[in-house]
Amino acid sequence: MKIGILCAGDTEVAPFLPLIEESTITEKAMLKFYEGRIGGVETVVLFSGVCKVNAAIAAQIMLDTFHVDAIINAGTAGGMHPEVKIFDTVISTEAVYHDVDEGILTEFHPWMDSVYFRADEKLLELSHRAADRLRMEGDIWWGRMATGEAFVSDEARKAINEKYSPLSVDMETAAIAHVCYVNRKPFIAVRCITDNADHDGAQCFERNCEKASAIAKDVTLAMLSELAGMAQC
Image (cartoon, rainbow, N blue to C red; front, side):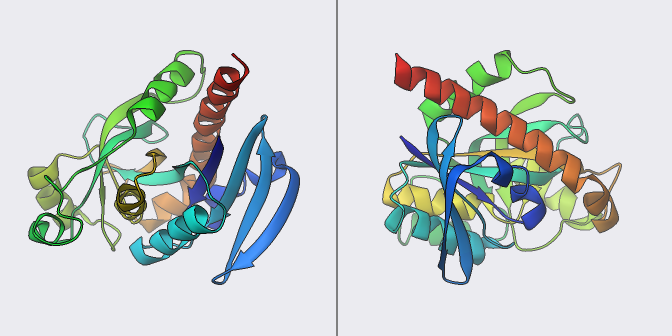
């Protein structure tokens, strides 16, 4: 199985790059795709740049050019649930746009039954097995992620929480899930929290991004390890 690991920023992808064995680099659409193996699993790794469109471009190229079998979105996010703390990790059970009119998804392509993009059940099972053997800072949560184009302020936070009740918020997850949905490919996101209602703002994100990215990497590697173990059975 070939896994795409898609990160939004260069800090988020940095912990993965030294781990890629026999790495080759392909440039396409002004992006660098690092192809090789991590822990015995074929992988393609890159950072897309922030926002929904950049993430969607990268995801579609991963599927069309590199023929990955599934995509893991690894990186950081803002905490939305009051109990989700900085350096906790959220694993998506589903993703939703908080800034897209709901009828666009249900009344037009891709004619969804709801506005929620569900994570792949097998990848979710894999994440639970991986979490059982991890010893790390922070807790792991499974739940909904919300995606939109702007850094969430206190004013926007209340409206998003009231409508969608997400555990976390970011600028890419739902877009990558959307691409996987229309291509019928498995998807899951692993996001470590850099900021929340108690520790808000871009400065908090910048201060915590490197450490949170390393934690998201550790969770993702544990999932790859589980996947490699299954392949050997």
